[in-house]
Length: 251
Image 1 (cartoon, helix red, strand yellow):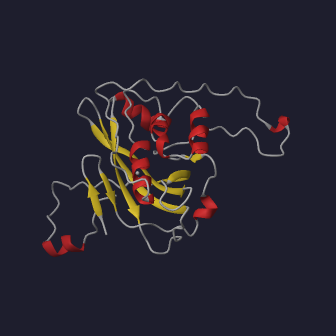
Image 2: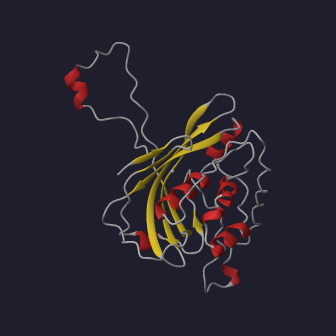
Image 3: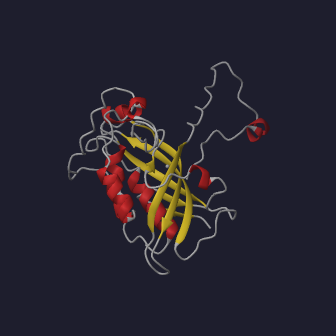
């Protein structure tokens, strides 16, 4: 079954494949990649390595926290989310975590902190203590140049081959596709990512909370082909055989 929530631009579909999730899942930290939620944590060695194995470079300065939101802030605030529904919690989390407003946010992590209401206590504490390195990336800088905010479509992939929910454990796969809206009227592509979540709760009937998140950057869709002025319009039969150039729409 597929439903659509308007206004906050959330669509739900079917739930996805988790065959390889245990391999790529990240425990205790947000794995933030690509043009979605990029993880700016710096690798400073591996367990068992000696201090001499750590590169002797000055650490990057941390980004400051985002500005307090003003009355013109465009950030999602889902209401009436059923905390006992793992899919609803997953989608609400993704909508907020990717709902940037570059007029107020210095980087994606500011939106992640706004989504902390759906984290487990330990996950929320870890994210609040994390300070991302400066430099949110070229794409973020482009959005910020237009003081853009992001709206997202979130699709839940609901294939039957995923792990079966238990009373205290659930997994969800989402596709997030964002659109950037500049305050100067400019629009462009926003974050796009496949997101995999592990949710836990204390027992049946209790609220679900996000314990782990893994994201994988989605490839940008190819631009539509430009027609040459001298080209001959395609016949109806040829058009029907052409592939659909539109991207997958559920980020």
